[in-house]
Amino acid sequence: MEKKNIDWSSLGFGYVQTDYRYVSKFKDGAWDAGELTTDPNVTLNECAGVFQYAQTVFEGMKAYTTEDGHIVTFRPDLNAERMANSAKRLEMPVFPEDRFVDAIVQTVKANAAYVPPYGSGATLYVRPYMMGTNPVIGVKPADEYMFRVFTTPVGPYFKGGAKPITIRVSDFDRAAPHGTGHIKAGLNYAMSLHAIVDAHKNGFDENMYLDAATRTKVEETGGANFIFVTKDGKVVTPKSNSILPSITRRSLIYVAKEYLGLEAEEREIYFDEVKDFAECGLCGTAAVISPVGKIVDHGKEICFPSGMEKMGPVIQKLYDTLTGIQMGRIQAPEGWLKVIE
Ligand code: PLP
Ligand code: COI
Image (cartoon, rainbow, N blue to C red; front, side):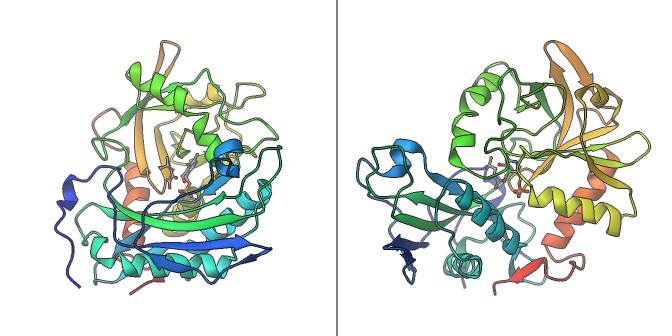
């Protein structure tokens, strides 16, 4: 299969239209058989549930070319499970988890020419999503839905790739204690848009959100979980019911313990402790692990000893091991890689 003529190494995190996408529709209580289509546009009634009451959930995952030339995805079963949980919380029908994985495989296979080559620094981002499609004007769930998957080749989420970023403590809250922060609903991202535009305007790359109830505990950023390293080399990551259960974070905890022999712990992290950590990073599918060099809290700066030039040593090891597993350079734990072709 011939690859598309794309300058893979100069890709940022943007939308590049690819050839095929997957569509399945839910009507009269059942999902149809689903199919690949070449049409990237979606035409819906003006009153569709997604337009009026934001009834939409999504997922994010990547396809990688491994060192030996296969195309793989990383733990798609966990994306399937999380999307099912997201759908249930917004009163949407679950797209069956085995069919979710099959839809990913079909879509990536059909767009194999867009999967960036091994070593290019780029990957194929895969975006499954689901929305309420029939007219809804009283506040209630839709009866009809569409599940879709599209792909787009991407480079680093933050400009500058592995260079440490600067973030600020946000005055806006991301998620309420018993709200929807733990699911991947479009509404969580809509309400973060003002905060991120304002952060960028003020020279920051991202927002650190604190827990909405007490504003004392670290939650996450707009699109990634946090990972910290203590001065004695322990990996710690925030535990909260109102953050997205990141598949990258869960994988990194395993990698830290089982591959690197490090202590790793998920626990509540008070913002007051952050100044004492040695390293900080953002982890997620899009972010991979993006190092944080500085956190600004209303003018007060926390500068990590790892500095603004490169990742700290422990985060570098985590990064190398995780990406090594994803690209087939390091043996993956059983079931982590789904070989597509
Ligand atoms: N937190 C938020 C708000 C996200 O949007 C994402 C991205 O998916 C993550 C965390 C990281 O999750 P994952 O590692 O499963 O991609
Ligand atoms: C992902 O990492 O897949 C996400 O959905 C995060 C988003 C900010 C791009």
